[in-house]
Length: 181
Image (cartoon, rainbow, N blue to C red; front, side, top):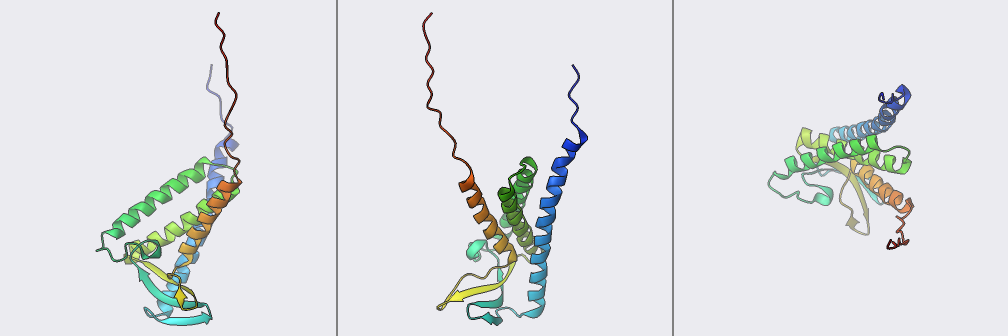
């Protein structure tokens, strides 16, 4: 019996599907890089520009991960963080390729993918990430962040929402009986 022939439209569907999500990720990554370029050309390190009562622009560099985790390490963290980001990018691309029809899930992966790309570009270019958004209230400042970090955070929230929207796995309570013959 001959192998079944897969219609060409079915084979193209994953490619078109991937193209849309990867395009969105690249658009967001470019937006991230454009904002960082503007900040690098506009601000001096640690210079503060007040935007509102609770928002400043300030140029800071982060050699670590989220919330400056590992920032004070001796430099070994940069190749590690690049490797982890590249692995995460590969996994997200694979997941986008393998799934279909899960819009929340795809938006979540796309946002996280764009943020990972934006920050890995910084690490490759500068050995650190460019942060510039300073949110503060009552004398307390959230750690500075950037567009890529925002995309990653929003993507993580969408992943949580998506997981809560999924039906719980049903546990079968049926039992089977056997009879002796």
